[in-house]
Length: 239
Image 1 (cartoon, rainbow, N blue to C red):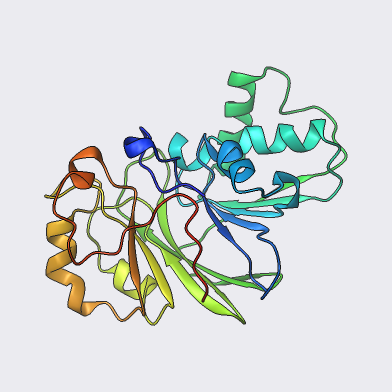
Image 2 (spheres, one colour):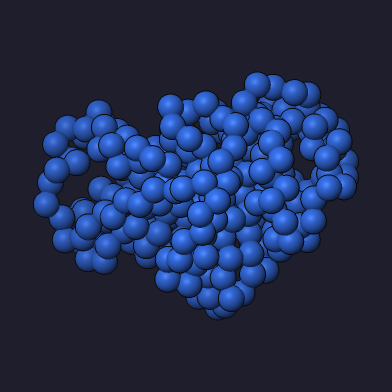
């Protein structure tokens, strides 16, 4: 849904990855929900009310700030089934604060559905319906722990780096995954983010079937990307 960085470089929406855990089913799981996510979902003709699970990697606005709009959209369009959000420790409080900042009173209003918030625990797998979810703590300052996330279902496995400096945890998150969505933020090392030089150095160590770069900055988009597979908004991948 969204393959851009925080500033929508290249005209790309902020991070939002939609998963359909079952073959031939519409997407009902999101990994991250940046501020532009409702626009991206509707552009791809996905009803936000059909999303029942959101997995958050970290609490920066370009990965998290679409949640208040997702909740309020459900409220005003008479959503009735619950929404589950799984994120770093403090996600529930940050969501309430964001809603109160943008729409005072919105965090405590009575709705026809419940927003259930669960927290990641580093490397502790959990089951959520057909999803087998494993978070791996990574290196990115966001006021709370940041995670790479691996999601496995009966149809395949996908991992996402989130935003992070290089860490060996990425190799474990992506180990044997059908698809690894990996930040490729800059051409050269940048604090708190992955860069193409470092990824190239470690590339042969990854055992995923396919690596797809996302969250590219303007300098990365303008650099020589020969040999890399690059995500774009609206890209569909079958696992």
